[in-house]
Length: 365
Picture 1: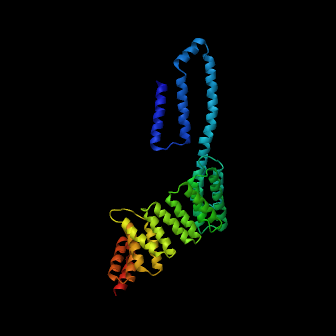
Picture 2 (picture 1 turned 45 degrees about the horizontal axis):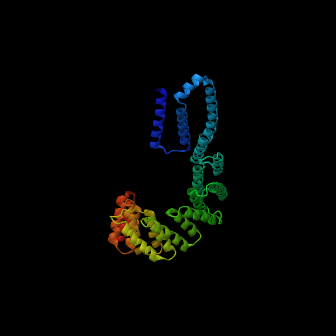
């Protein structure tokens, strides 16, 4: 009874664990080892035990069982080290990296800890390298870090990504992370753009229907000042998922930058349709504002206004958008609407009251 209870509870525990956590190589090893035990136990039937007792060979069976058990222990110890202990140490080392980040230590110390972490060479390397590339991307954008430190960190991160790509050529996450980091770090080394494009194109080959990959390709081409190529890449992204209005907004912005205003106009009409009460698409308001700001920089306030109005529909609580709309209406000569929008901005953010009251006083006089 006791043995049956233990076996039953083990199976129940495994079932409950699967309700909350996905299986990993660690749980697979333990579970299939347990199944192997059950199989061996079932094979060693009561009749075989009786035969061993009658024939007087029980001691031989005991010796054989002990030998098999010792061998299994050695094998499981090796498996446990590779599948459990080393990954645990790698995870602990990664946590140490994150602690160093929170302590704001020098990038060289963080880099040394990353090297130590990757030296474990386990199935958890992917997570470590992903964190490594993300940190390298953030580091490139920082203004308080010197170029030399940035280059050393980025070079190490890219080397780790390239090694991972060689080991797993069809690892989509590695290809995307590599392309993104090469794009961001291209000011450090112009050759990074070509390398990044290779990874992005490989990612498209692996998963041609992934829209975000074409965004990366467009970024790469924009850095090269290839506006026409970027426009084509974003056009493909929109074709893959026409309902993604953020993709359409980015397409409009690039179209404006290459002098294709008619494309931006078509996108605007399409966005208005997708954002109707019957279609609850919610693009990033900041992307819409970016298009509006482009028109403002060109003094085309009538073109900027509908983009800002779409942004307000998406982010109704953004007081600054309302304030900017007030300025647009003022430039278009509609003082009443300018006052109305200014008051709406003040209602959303009372701290704007002094500026709004002064604005209304000036345009009303």
